[in-house]
Image (tube, rainbow, N blue to C red; front, side, top):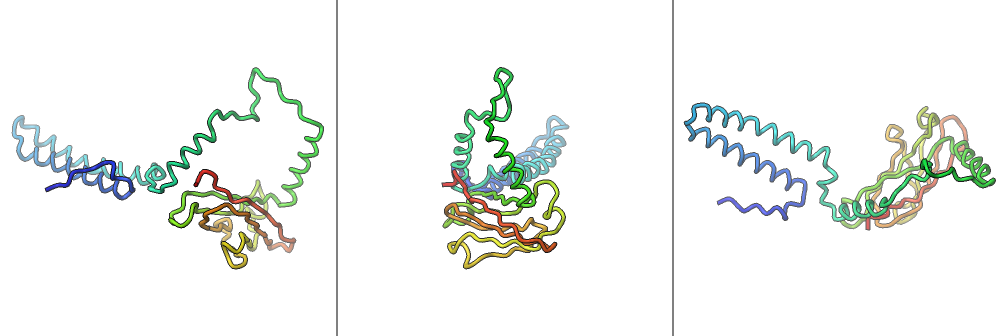
Length: 227
């Protein structure tokens, strides 16, 4: 006796895949049974057999698409829907303030703006175009809130793109590591992977191969909307 399918209980990616495979088997079986039993008109068995054959790659292609293109939507993380809602709320009524609307006049910048711009350019030079970035997702660990990747980014050409970085020391505090963590994985942009239940300040000391002094970068690792 086949069990009744209850769609509301299908919440995990493998359950969705299983439901698709079960549906494929049901459809293919129906076509093949029909091909065996239907004799009139003469062309019906052939059509049903072809339909059964075509159904298999169609379903498999749909499953592959679900597991690749729509993988984020298949997450069973309890934070995912909340994160989507927060993102929609955060960007509600969004308008890019750096793009001047046709009906608006450009805003006159205060004299101090030139000084701020000088400081901005100076930051590029001081850090040699290197910056610390992070990305996150709802954690796969039930005791944590977010899985986080921290890594180095290069603005235009510089030490990272030229292979001049020897190592990067990370420090996030004693709640994460007993001391600092040194990364040598240049091909992965010296990425560090962590899980966290709260925001933290991350410092990264970048050491170079060309004998110049290290550069100290910082990043506040936040994941607003995860909780």
